[in-house]
Image 1 (tube, rainbow, N blue to C red):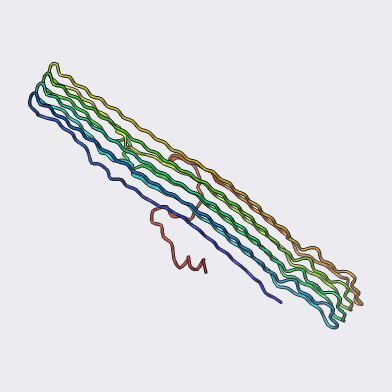
Image 2: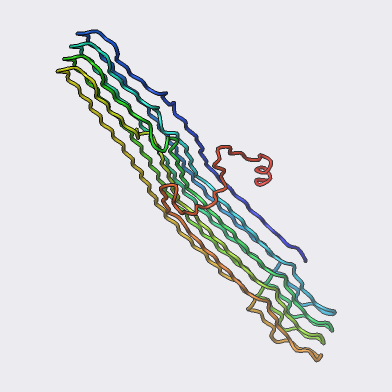
Length: 411
């Protein structure tokens, strides 16, 4: 019997939200109260409000249950009379590749809403009453949440051993030759990536100019400007990953006992190898904020107004930035390489009229386990030196996939 069984398993699960937001921007604002007569009462109230809310949520529940059995062993050649007795197995190979890539949010928000603003009260008559009330409010809220629950259970058995050649009588030799047994597992889980870039404003901000000039005597002139900018970025990740990997690669446990004949008795096993790689990357937050939304250049001018005029300029500028980044990861890795074995072979009680002695020659037994876990990284600012993992997602806002490739992976 000579055959090899190779099993490749590829499992990919993705949840992706890509958004680019460019909120409506107000053009330059100019407010003028000019050239009005004496005893006039002039009021201008301007309110500019802009609110941008981005909410991105992912919830992934992935369960991968993979069991692979590749077996060329468990062969019997017992109690034969005459000729050679030979068991020669092929290779047994079990390959499992599981890739989970899930839960990614990306938001690119242009946060600014107002251009340059100019307020001017000028050349109004005596005893006029002139008021300007300017309110500019800009709110940007970005909320990104990921919840990943991933359970990977992988069991691989590759066996060419457990062969019996016992109680044979004849002039020929008795031999058991096994192939190689390989169990290879590659398990990768990448989950929960948030990327928020909030910007698009002028580096130095917009200009705000407030003028009260050349108004008549006894005039009452007031400018009130209230400028508010509020930016909130909230990024939350929760990951619960359980990796349970069990590998068994065996070429041993062969018996060649109680054989009688002139030939040699020989057991020659192949190699037993196991390579296990478990890589878990979860919970990464990255935020950049560069909003030139709050006014940079402020000009206030009160000039050339008449006697006994009452002139007031009241400016209040508030800028609030709140970035909240939270990660919670629960990763359990259990890797059990039970048997990577070429031993436990028996050549006992054999009688030979030839010159040869019974021999047992085993192959190599090798097991390599590599477990890597990285996660819970928060990065804020464009200068952050964080090497984020490759989530196999394209964040240039032209995400695409090939349907044919997807079908090939599933079939």
